[in-house]
View (cartoon, rainbow, N blue to C red):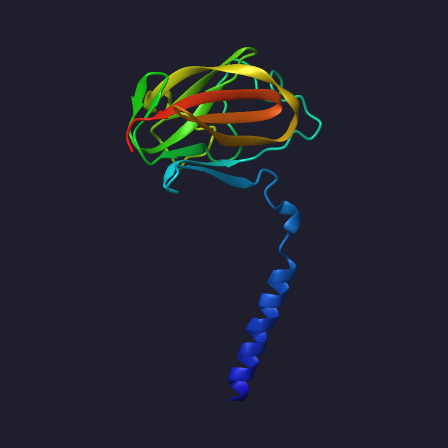
Length: 179
């Protein structure tokens, strides 16, 4: 019995020491977020999983995120979008499934890229796996957006995917091909 108490005490002391060493200051500075668009019957249509980097007094577009270069559209792992139904984007049919989102920001227009590879680090874009590239309009945001944000808005023809950060907003209309 004394042996058991000794072993239990030993492992308890080690666990307490390890818990004290956890560095909460190393918590991700670009936290993970999820946005889901549902229909009137509460069925999921689309979901985006992404990390939200912060502006932190930096100039974002044109400096931190270069114009004309592929951007992971967030931070950390590649941003992922799941379509639970077939959708149409700019006249192009996109089958239900999971995709990574990349963008190429520009001053007036952006390129939206759907890529068939998922679960990879965001800077590992493989253009051979791109399944869709379409243009999105860029517009100034009415206010500064501190953390990169993605949202869906209901539209009579489907939904609109909005992305915004710093002083920039972009949007992409998406139509549900079937329900």
